[in-house]
Image 1 (cartoon, rainbow over the protein chains, first blue to last red):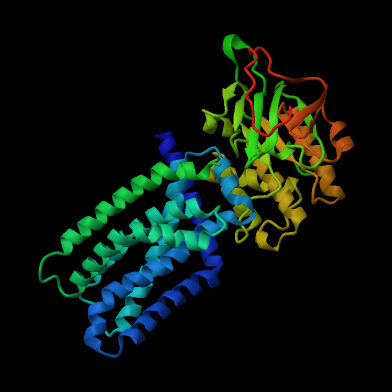
Image 2: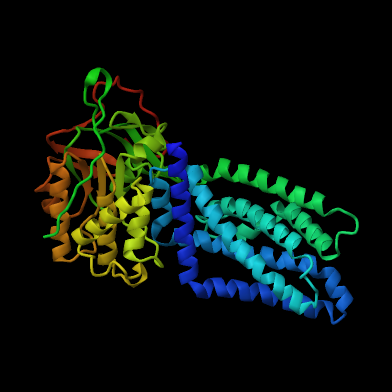
Length: 229
Length: 259
């Protein structure tokens, strides 16, 4: 019980310091959001003014923007550790490696959630889609997607943070792995927006839950090794 | 002078109540690519001793300290800290060893107090208790007035002082200091000397790597000189070059190392 309480205290402390760093370095967080919104705008230009076409493509475009913004977010949360040798210091603290992973993943999930939550209304405005009626299933999809993305993103960012070409390596390694998450999240979002006429929303959300569980298990199991030399 | 409390890890007894050595390494070697930063170092350090680790640039001082700190693993050899096998029970060892390295390991967007408060949580203090401990440590290192400033605005010397404060909030049994006087002004150097004295009195084992041989040697029980990744000379009390009480292990042939 004491171990669990200590692990929780460590995870919360790590997530808290990441959150403070993110909020104080507003420029970086704001730029990521702006970048993701710009991606949505450019997709809109690329697809043309046909509102029907935009509405059909909206779920996929939303999640691509979340993935692109999320890659930057995950890299930044680990860049904090790379500056001034903090990652080594973090590894040398006498704490359970799983608690360190939990803290980093918690911070990542919170950042992803904010990103997804803010991009939803941007999509609604840019592509003229009413999201009011479907807000609850949309929110569930964003929450599940954020958890899954942060779970695996934290592990991969931990892997690439010491690499020289980390900016390229993170998307290169991560994008193939998040393909199932992307698929399930896009399908769930599309089902939610269309009122779920085929009753498939539940299945896609279940797939997202399964993906989250698998990625969390993989992250917990591997992150400790990534912290070591 | 502000009050300075020194926290220490509880001593461990070895088999049959004997006191195990603080450090016992057998043929430690570490390769980086094809070059060997350490080429087979066997050292035994008694508990509570202060050891000056000397040698020219590239002698292997930092590599040895990083291996003792469990920051990197040796390519060959074995290592026990306070009688605990550091290569297997790494987490247990990390609760007893504290390492002050060249990189200070702070978070730039956090204030000095937030950085230290985070460290206290990681070292196992409760939140309230940790805050008190952190504030006392900040006062000791002379950063009380800068406690609410973000570390991004700190000079190299202030960063080093904050790193010293982080060592103060830990509970070490073995303390590894890599060039602790570097980047500090005269007053800061005196602070390091005073802290080394306090840790010594408290029974902490200290290994101090430094180019300021005279400064460190005046406080040390023994001096170990490294050259080319090997122990060139050992003098003083409490340190023996070579394993004690262990049967000699067969030497491992390391490619590219001239022994």
